[in-house]
Amino acid sequence: MNAPNLIILVLYYSRHGSTRKLAELIAQGIESVPGCDARLRTVPAVSTVAEATAPDVPADGAPYVELADLEQCAGLAVGSPTRFGNMASAMKYFWDGTSSQWLSGALAGKPACVFTSTGSLHGGQESTLLSMMIPLLHHGLLVMGLPYTNPDLMTTSSGGTPYGASHWSGLDGKKPVTDEEKRLAVALGRRLAETALRQAAPLPARSA
Image 1 (cartoon, helix red, strand yellow):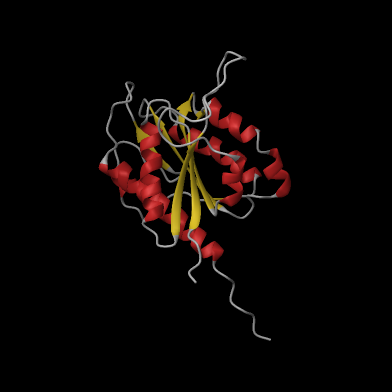
Image 2 (cartoon, helix red, strand yellow):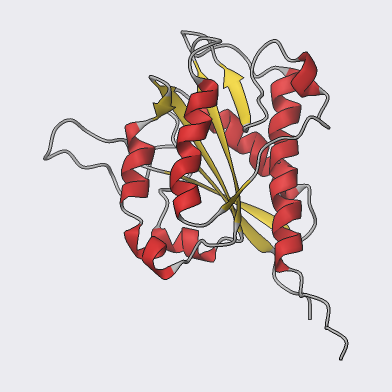
């Protein structure tokens, strides 16, 4: 009987669709690895009106994440657009509600990566990626980036960093994802899935 595929969670927040595009490319990279399935999930927006509530099901895109998705995944990719060099409040709000998973160590030892998009080329991509790593490190996740064995890191004139995949969307959010950005996002998803498979493999038996 074949073992079930590993679930790799791709969790993102996207206001205008740019971060969602990267999430879908990372999922493509994950699913290029036999034995792994991508699970796309998003988080609801945070409202300034205390009484406002989001619908149970988003109008389009991925379903909202549940805490069980964190516990069930074998690896995790987290993405958010940049807000003044930091992750968006919706993503931060979600992580602020994961104390139970932190206390139980539910995520400890799982591989993880991060991704982002910005309206301006120097709009805080790297600081946003680093900000998203902080809660992941507190949860004990094994955070990975993109090594320079990916030649696109040396030639890109748009997004793409060693800290994670990124996209320069333009101030109107309409810049297409470049070929370099696509390849780096797919490569990040593939690397995450391959690492999750290695983590899940049984350790060889010790000789007496």
